[in-house]
Length: 124
Image (cartoon, rainbow, N blue to C red; front, side):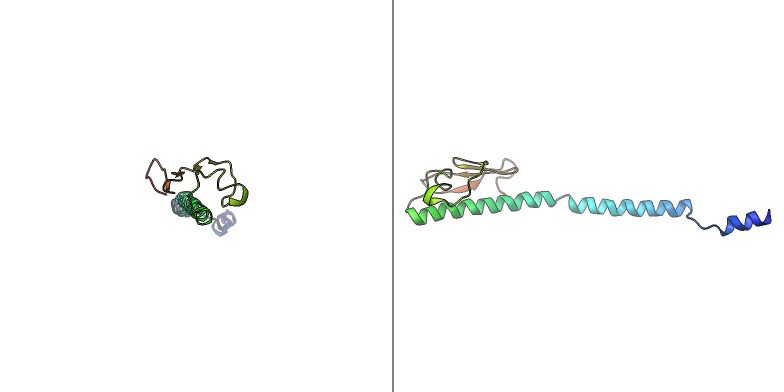
């Protein structure tokens, strides 16, 4: 009997309290990671919106510099022929470029204005 008691005392392992502390620490770390990663997609969509807005604006101004007037529309005026300043793409239709949660509109030949039509904020 004495030998069994000594063997039980010499066996090493984790107590329930130690295991609970480790689980709580892992839970806190997981919460921190989830909280910090949560806004990454929003920042990515904002960056894509700003990039698309800049690309369309530069394309419109390049067309104007080459031809002396603003283009009547974005597609096909800026996506085909000698005036190809934008890459043809499925989300570019006439004077509208649609992205993830935003739309870039082009007013046309009158002023050459390009703006973001975002229902939530009106900007990227």
